[in-house]
Amino acid sequence: MPILPELHEALEWWHSHRPYRGDNVFMMLDDTIHCYHQPGAPYKHRQKFMARLCKRAGIERPFGFQAIRHRRAVDLYKQGPRLRDIQLWLRHESAATTERSLKG
Image 1 (cartoon, rainbow, N blue to C red):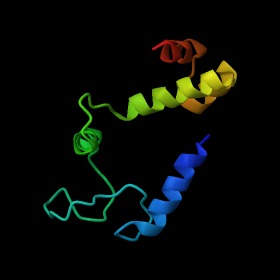
Image 2 (tube, rainbow, N blue to C red; image 1 turned 90 degrees about the vertical axis):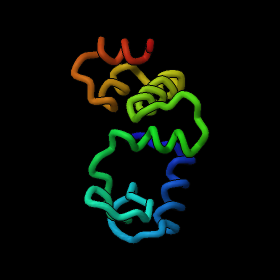
Image 3 (cartoon, rainbow, N blue to C red; image 1 turned 30 degrees about the vertical axis):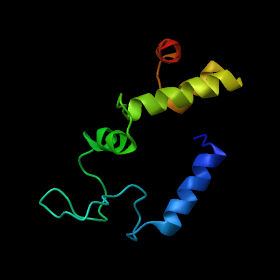
């Protein structure tokens, strides 16, 4: 999967500076322990994950994982890769689905 150099660098930094060690890149950081939450454990319930991150960052219009995926596909398309390559990256069965995704 294509990854931007800036993202790769940020993930490398996070891997060496994260407060909890383990195999997970994305983990619970809140120190509040309850039955669905253990600090340092992987996320099991992600429904509100992006909303919380957006709120922390002061973003007025929250977005989710699908918006990030769509944004990356559009950026790739603008850089010139063929539609078929983006279709494979997105794992779409149909090129028509990819085209709809790129039009937005």
